[in-house]
Image (cartoon, rainbow, N blue to C red; front, side):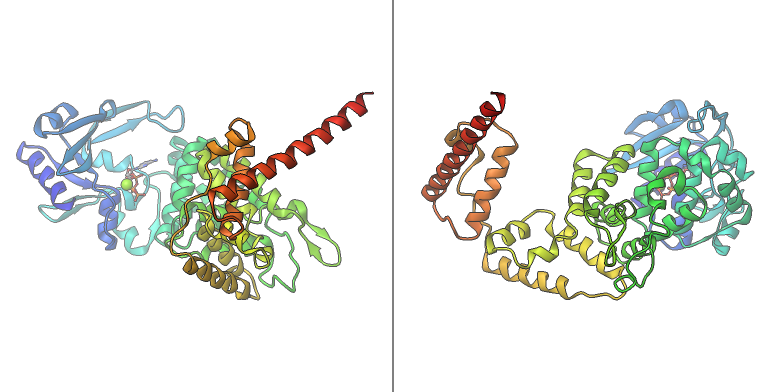
Length: 453
Ligand code: ATP
Ligand code: MG
């Protein structure tokens, strides 16, 4: 990708235009991090870029952005521009093509506002980015408050970049964020969700959440999380303190490879505790897993996450306490859990929950891991199901629906537990189930008629 981006810059320069790497890739290169992509800026106008380069797509031509496809890589090539007016706090009302310096000044933070000429090996820094990079500072270019008013997402971007690179805020940048925290609420929920994903994937993931809490931004975007602050837990089992502390410790314990859904599940696994807090013989949070899942669902829908993703997160939250009963389950039932596609993700949530607790007790976690390994080793290959959904519907004379899934699960458990081994046995069990269900229905309808009389 890097040599191709240099190739493009050479072509643009050869045609008589200025061309540089811009923004994030310059910042990352100077930090010694491998850039994710190479954005290019140039004095060439969109039409001229299209003439000079072979494969281009006019992705944002009206804003001066052309996508170039070369050697299988994509590059955003933007004409130097300045933005004029942001009536919606997001997209500029119009763009004017200008100079490199003007283009640098419309960018958000000094460390994101530099250009680099890879041929001359020269950094173009109109905004003091290098100095801030050395001092490890996040500083708005220009007047911080004005920059926040133009685009409120910059509040979240400041918090993300500061924590992604373990920097500090320049004081005026910090106070502008605190003063204008309420505007974070005005950002569209999709954009908030995308930014939060980037935050929760950074290392350590709790840091941006602590900053959002500190700057009052969290109150605007996930107020439900604030209730974890000051929510007491039984001291004997949770010397780490309140639910907020526990959650942040759990989040930070996740390995870098932890998938996004596991991260969100850990963040919300105890969000139902404040609502279910009761002082009985000790502090208890009965049924908090259900409340947590309900709240997580509400929040993730609000932030426009995909349905399937939300279902996965909520499943992990709902089952994060099921490891205790699991040990005593029948072999078939255990296998049913072990073979669940999200079981190992659930184990990550369970482990993080322990890591975030003081004192830590991994004995149950290790026991389950051992049982899991034993079961999986005993079964070199997952056996094919003995019966299909279609057959269940045929034998029972029912249509597709939740009931078929429920019965298939039951059949699977019996198969994995060794109670049924052949298709014949499966069908006869199915018939038994049908008989029992028919009898139950008969009784239920009798009760109904009686009630009517
Ligand atoms: P990342 O590594 O997260 O992609 P990045 O710096 O490349 O970081 P992008 O969102 O890809 O961030 O944006 C590319 C560049 O565009 C930024 O470096 C910055 O110069 C500019 N930019 C992006 N978003 C904004 C914004 N909301 N306001 C002003 N400038 C922005
Ligand atoms: Mg980028």
